[in-house]
Image (cartoon, rainbow, N blue to C red; front, side, top):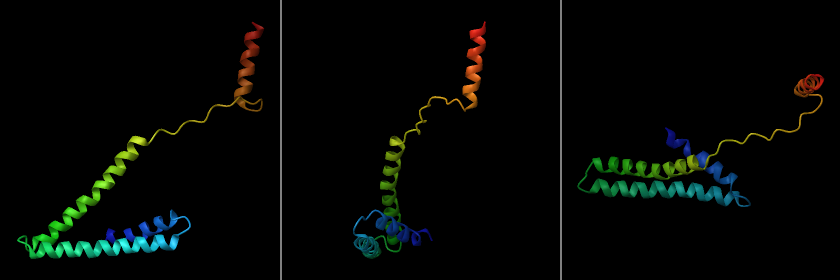
Length: 114
């Protein structure tokens, strides 16, 4: 079921980052999916004809799914090492209209009076 959701998402991301050639990018994305289907079917057919028999296509599918997880894991690891905590904005000077400024002035006035 999730396999049906991947092509539209990948195609839209491809078009978003395509710059001046969104049509070419969409065409290449769809062509890559078609090539993957053709190559996967060919490999599974070869596995079916091998000594693996009926378990061959399932084994091919398992290996392909595992290989698809390798770049995903690599991207996740890269993202995890490059993610930094968001920096807090620098504190600016307190204006006279802010309550903190009034409190600070009152404290200074009390200290100066003693």
